[in-house]
Each structure stands twice: as C-alpha cells, then as structure tokens.
Amino acid sequence: MKSKRFDQGMKIRREVSGAQRVDALMGDLNAVTRPIHTLVTEYCWGEVWSRPGLTLKERSLLNLGMLAALNRPNELKIHISAALNNGMTRDEIVECFLQVMIYCGVPAGIEATNLAKQVFEERKISIDD
Image 1: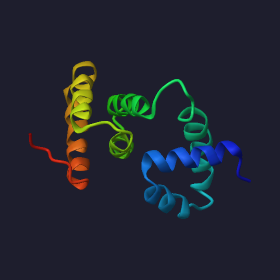
Image 2: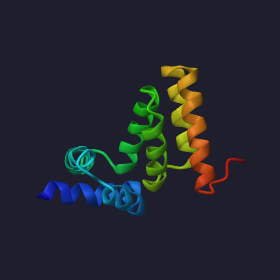
Image 3: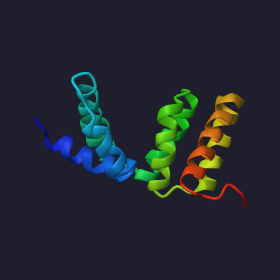
Image 4: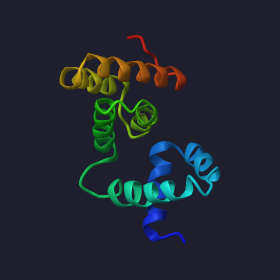
C-alpha cells in the first residue's frame, strides 16, 4: 500500500535522479528489491529529502562528500548526476572532490573525480576550460 510519504518520495526521487532512471528502476522491482526501494523512497526521499531545512542542491553537495568519503562509487556516480540535476555545476563538483581529497585522502578524491569525469562525458558536459 502506497503512503503519502511514498508519493512525496517518488516525486522528489524522480526530480533529483531523473524520471526515466527512477521509473526504470521501480518498474523492475521484485520480492527481493521491492522492500528496500519502498523504504528508501519513503524515508530517504519522502521524509529527509523533502524537509525544508536544506535545498536539494545543498543536500546533493553533502551526499557527494559523504559518498566519496565512504567509498561508495555506484551511489556516488548516481548522485553526481543528481547533483547536476539539482543545479550544481561542474566546477562546484570538482571543488567538492578537492575538499574530499584533503579531508578523506587522495585515493577518495581521485576516485570521486574519475567518476565525475565519466558522468560529465556521459552528459556531454565539457571537461576542458
């Protein structure tokens, strides 16, 4: 049974991550994956991402730093694209990963930057000045 929180979560999740990606993901759920994505949609997106205290752009900036620090490359790549959807620029993302490198280590910064480069290329965002 869908809840109001789930509906709000889907709205924000589709806005941030892209409707096509989320619709494809949610359309491919099964008995193994459905419970986790229902919980993520309700609580991550519907409860936390919908709060008024931070903008979506600010939440994206935090996620990039945390995911890079935690070495979560699959989620980081998704959230780099989401950060662009939320108004972060290429240069802001690069600055974020420079900060990550200083506080979390060179390997974390390099890995994050390499993933960002992949996303920029996929989205046809110039990687040159």
